[in-house]
Length: 110
Image (cartoon, rainbow, N blue to C red; front, side):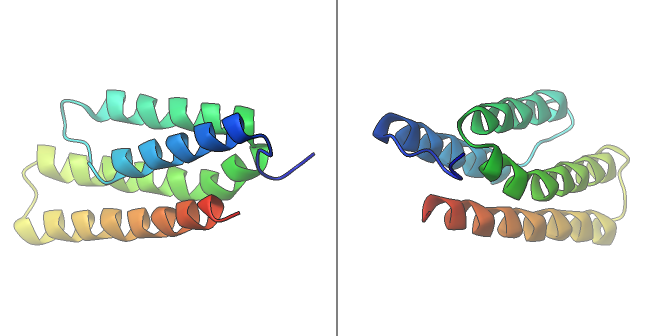
């Protein structure tokens, strides 16, 4: 089994899915849309797995942690946590997004 798609159509679809994933992560959820945001990420990850289980494996733990950190940040926003706590959770979320973005870029170059 190949690591990444080899035919041109699958490569283009993978590039599009990785782009969509990155865009979705760069637009963090708020209280109202957290479930839809999470579902959208999971849908994209399922499509990535259909094209390349290897790519999904490389992204899975990073995505799981990004979702967890987003949930913590949304909880801080919803509970009116102190500004310092809210800022810290936002910073932790964006740090994780940077890790995911780095992995996305690595996968795009394969």
